[in-house]
Length: 366
Image 1 (spheres, rainbow, N blue to C red):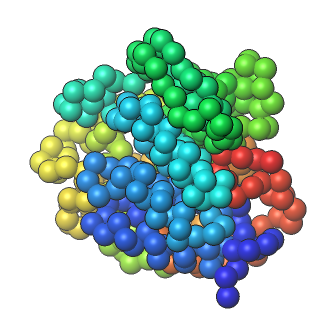
Image 2 (cartoon, rainbow, N blue to C red):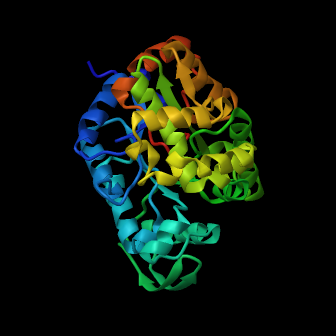
């Protein structure tokens, strides 16, 4: 029986398709079908420059499901020409029947430098969103020169009047305020402490108020690593220790700063022989022995910024995110099958009527 229809759909909950690294993008099809059976609300699609192209995955999710909200979380506006991004979004919007939201992020400066792209600024993201929205509403953009680029003429179709939500995937407080001002929704980051989650939500709401917007219309998603003890010890190691270590590899300074963690611990982590010898992302390349070693290097406090323990404890942790101000929770790092026991426990404690205003589209609240 498909439980995703009607009131049984949990529009406040999402998951990441192909969580982590995958060599088989076709697995997304079965994941989306299973997610609908379980009643999950949305699938979020990250992008990697290997076999995880955001546009292709969005198309697959659109036809593999009929109720799931779908979002890129995230792609980058600078890796495609704005006409290409606009076309991808309008295609996904219509293909999915309005279930799609375009999620954009800042990306990694080091990577962009290596492949010859300019780093993304907050001003560039805001400018790109403005250009995209003009195209989606049938405008001809002539002689645009802004932070996202210079474009002599951009046009899709003058008959377009597409209402496509935009999400921003951000970490820092100033960018969070920007997201509240210009975006329809915000995707936060994994391994945020409770205090960081609450302050991040406040920053988004503050940015919306400053821009003269209703703060309640900006949908804020917490991203919560959900790693129950019903998983194998090896899976728990890779999804917790491995994933946090990978984030610390990529942008540890920012994550440590926003969480108020001790930067000296980050220095110790970076100087560790396992980290220094890592060939690529730790969650994909490290052995179990290396992950066990890093588990002892990382503070328990850092690893506790997640949902762990029994399925019931994970469900309580999910509910905590809403009490801290989030509108939605992405259960990160787990497939729908891995989330099934947690979802059963969550349904048992889910407050009746609390999430009735939410739509499946992850960029919409009403």
